[in-house]
Length: 258
Length: 254
Image 1: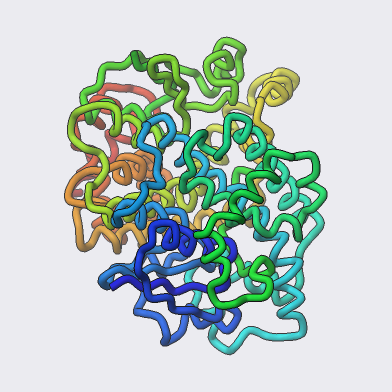
Image 2: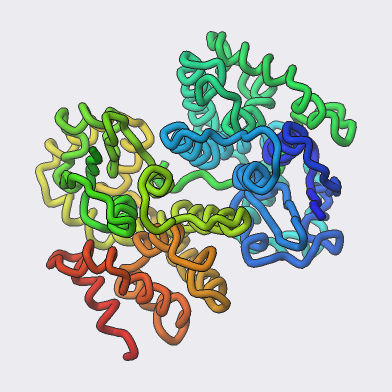
């Protein structure tokens, strides 16, 4: 039995939905309303140690025969390793190394950068004037995730934080453009989990940082090709969201060394 | 032909070293003196334009990212596997590598820098230091190095690091209360990476890691520490890291 607890098809939630569709894996989808803190409520299985320590911030939970799998990129690697279908991990060790390097960069730099901007632009206005439901924040074990929620409730995004988010998105856009010079995909000739990983975060950039996307034709072409993939279309249609690209909740923390 | 460019067998530099020692892979060691900023000198930038250590060159191809280097070594060379074959245990290995590398590791190194390395480096000529920072190719690394060198960590940041290490060591201890290794049935990349990030913690921050508070964590550090690979990397040295390693093993059963 395979179950995916997920929110809108955007960011971390979009990644496993794409991989499930790419590999045609049968999975019971269990939508969760993250803004109502259902991910910490009785709808969920009792969390394992790793699930409790949600390093990714808010993100999907995969349950496979009772075993819990978190962290969207590693969840995708798990799906690719544990299930048949076209392999989305490169077999060449050098390319595999690049995939892992991208995963770290996306998780430590790109995701926190884009997430900060997305929470400011979409989550904070949605929560304006509201208070967290009683007991909800206290149930979150990692302090930076609690702080992420309170920052959104208070609309407390300093100029420094926003500039930091934009700086990191800018680095990511440039890195993607450079990688696609050898394209057509981020790791070269083959489509891979790295495309899924980066695209899931890139999808909101036209809303968050349109100016930073300008002058990057290869990235624009890659985004369009991603969008056309049947698996991506299928994933984006999950839940009939009007604008899934506006769905944000506190994500991974900004790396402390910059 | 495998060349590894590394500093002391501590934190990131130690990871590829343990991986090749575990698998018995022949390699050429290139010691890069991080505190002399060797990693930003032209000779090294010719090898790794990013100016980060460790780095590895295998048959002419540059391989980066210390934890991912363990995967690379495991994929390319024969010898005992360093990653579980079961997909769930592999996931668990990834999860703990991320916990070590991104969650507790940076806090441990922040403590190390603020108490030891930072003050030592700051004794050098200020102009030379500033020039050294200017030469760092990656902006992220320039920020990190100036934080490290000038000790611009706020009291709040250091308190957060300590709090994180206090809770992080309890989480690791909880994980190890029901198994010997972080993932799978034998020593994997998660054990090697975790050990390298944290073996100095019982000496550096004994309130967080000691035999009473975190017995499973301590037993695991010593279990990994007894491995021939770790003995070979750390057992013969005389420097600060070898000294910490000796203290860790000497405290056994104390």
